[in-house]
Image (cartoon, rainbow, N blue to C red):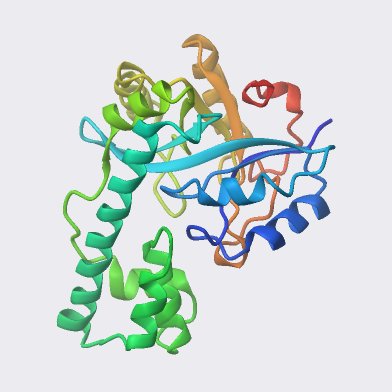
Length: 278
């Protein structure tokens, strides 16, 4: 049974592992097939692709934060052409969206909580290739203002309204497809710390995502039960969608290990996933 993980983050976005450390951890975990899916950037994929040993299969990935016709969602893109102009243009747009979001959160900390970030802290944040809320939370934790980044986000950042800072779902899915990629709905029942959707809520959202052009579902996920994964697999088969699975590993920034594809720790045979064959 091949070990597989198609949802992994490095410090090119909000993971803690450098590319070198991540590759070492992937080998230690015994992964045979993996994808690096950093938020809104493919730079880490270019770097890690130079380090892949012959016995490990690597699939290029990315994760885009989207709003698909009113539905907030994360879209994973796999096996795209990294030189596609449309994709590169979309990624540049994402950098501007994230920069605007960062600036709103910095101002929010100052106005609402009386927290002014130092030049060193700001320089570090602006140096991130794909800055996210967790980066700001880590700065607050380092100041001793919270015990961990989850507490910091809830206490200081969750109330900040950042406006329309997501990719348009139709555009993101279309661009990924035109770049030769496979767009997959990430953690489709709800992500980390979110209430999981009921079956009725999910099916309503699925109809919209299919109409937008989604090609797969992340059926196996580190926060989902065996029952939830079985439901998603059933829906994927009924709608002729790819079946994928991933841990959403973030190193020390999140309490989940590589290759954890369900919270019940039921082994997932690679034959149960079909994306890795691309």
